[in-house]
Length: 300
Length: 310
Image (cartoon, rainbow over all chains, first blue to last red):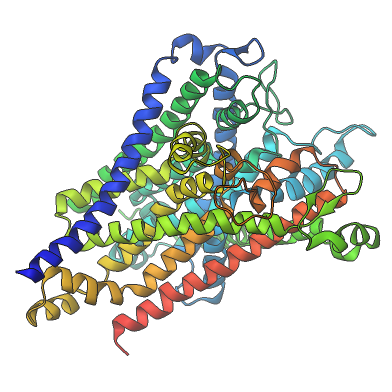
């Protein structure tokens, strides 16, 4: 009897820990929804900031975030998917090269995001950008050798690379071996097998990985601090070497460096809500696609 | 009819394509693999002047291990001790909260919770993991800071405690996920043996499953620790950012990451200050590498050997 009481007590402690996580998530979401919904309106989403950022909307920041994320996807996704194909189709688990790549990928995932920012500044801005300028720019003019949209996107592409590789490799491995063997037995080459048999069966998973990477990239701010995000710009970026406004960076600046933090608080809440909605929508669609993909695999 | 045509000419073309694609794929895999070296190379390249350039060395090294971080002054001082203390303080606070909460919640999910509840807990944790850190920072700045100040009576609203507690929010999902993985991959046979000997549910969970999953839990804690050390936006927004060498938890603190984040945008390229910030980046990078390698070793080697029962 005493022992059962003790048991319930221990189980209760673990249940309490799980409950704590529940409450935390619920509390943060509630607080942000309550604070953000009041200010959210069509004008807020479509107007630029006004009166020294104390009024108006956040359209340039939304635009900047979307363009940045699109560029990041174009730059990083193909490389990530191909690396995953290499790991899953062209090597065995014991191959030294595959093991090194896998080790590198898992390490890349654990490097702090601010270090990626340093890398973006040192490699993309200073090395690649200045290098391009030396060839194409008129004398003494800086076009690409400064923080810019393209370098921020490239930095985020490297940052999200491990996310893409890991999740795509997992889905490729989930395609049954029999499919590959059947194709190879019919005389298909390795590439034909990969292109016509393995990849079509993994489309859902690849999409999931892509969306997860995009949502990770959309929420990162630290690598943008010195690779191209700007506090306020009078016009939208229209070329790769322009700077840009970003939802997360906008929130950071409003919350820490604004003249009157209290006055802009509703604006900040609404910005947070938009940022959160953007990343959650991406995550949710990833979860839904993964779910449907699983159902399909179970049926076949 | 065969989809993969069989006339000799087409066959040869297919073989050529196959060879080309093999080359292309291997090359691109090597490119993405080389980024990890490029990261190390280029952060180190910008940091190396601290040791290899006589003038910079003169400016930096004498004060590098002092307790004054005053990079922008008449007589700049680059003491990283207060930054190390700040990082340690916030990280330890975060771990004290995140490890028990993460591991216990994982234990509940893996061993006690009914299946329907399990299917709710996991997405909720994923949701928490999906919060951008700038959002958690915002929450800490406006909600958590006030609540904790009322609770502790701290002199300053933003301090190491606020930062630490907020970081734990982003470390919990990592620790939970890896610990839960390790706990639910403990073979059922071990647990059934325990039931068979008359042990109750909680005895099996605490004395059998938990110890068996220990390497995975340890690895999860390490990766959570790494995440806490590398967290930037949260500490930038919630710790008050004053580089002071104090161990008091309710004093303001400034971490290594926050220093880079706050100062890099205003620094002159090639300045000693610029080099020191990159040096801090190198330290963070190597630290992450070290933690990750140990964690991998624990997950892969130890856990596998344990379950194979050698």
